[in-house]
Image: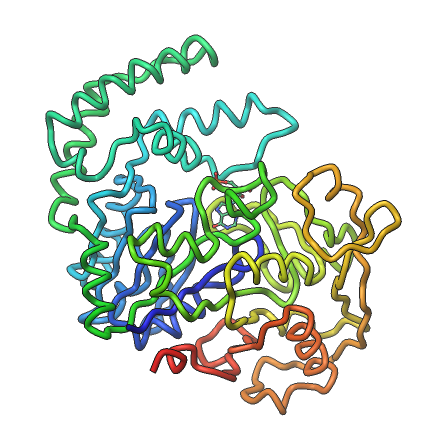
Length: 431
Ligand code: IMP
């Protein structure tokens, strides 16, 4: 039984694709367990960069299986575009497997995501407008359409008819917009079903069989723990569980199968969309990090908000995820600052606190208590060993390990595969 879980430990966009790419080289099965095409990461394969949203990165390995688990919400149009794009570039997609229990994003979910956001005005979440929240809403309301329903024409027709009647009432009466047409959606989605049918199976069975056969299974997270529906900065979160537990429920495996949990973080913090962000920088240091780190959204191209490394949020994520290793990216972006800061605690109403408040108004009043450390000027993008990093960079990383209460497995000093300092191979844990 060999399972490694990759989880975003901040607000998403931590560079999970890089660790996924590294770990998937040895994996037999790579599984996505939550989120949908709100996620986006790029993988470099044989010198070419590929942008993936739904297909797991295991698709690039011959003989690997790339699994979209039951916890993922699938926009079939977006998935097929991705499959066609991969096969058009000579990538073999026969290893793709899609859960028969995964829920389907429908056109009314995408429309409602937009209308709900508009209606919230200043309180908008800043979603990716891909219909993710409304798809999970229907799942929880027990009216969702699953992949197995889509494959049965009669079941699909009946569910679509019922749902569309309800959604069109909301679309026209609450939001004053144009209703959607049954025939158009039905015909479009039956076309998708016919194309996707060959990939659909009981993926829980597949993943459990692989684990029982001692195959290496990599669980590839999307978004981040601070965007988790339960543990994140609610309501400014996504509608799934990016925290490590979501890998178990979203892939249909028992939590006892997941021993090695690698939390991915940046050397600083970023977030897109609205919501609390205590260490956010509103000055030229933040602007400089954004430009150096090219901190613009992959899916929506929005400029990301930037902040110093927040160890209070990190300890919150460590607890929620049961994180066993930390993998830190983009250390090179911090070269050239006279000093660098780490938030070690918050001050709330004159008191020092060491937990991440649930209440948004408390979070609003939290002031970060920083530790300021000397920076480094050197270009570190060619450094291969931890000992060869400037002393101040080493000190910064050691302090992060202490405050995060987690050891570093890798440190990344640039975007390429070989710009990674490897301190520990997480696959070794389960050997
Ligand atoms: P939704 O997932 O589209 O509903 O968006 C909810 C919140 O999660 C918004 O703040 C989004 O910006 C954020 N979000 C969703 N997916 C990602 C991601 O892959 N990276 C970073 N933020 C994300």
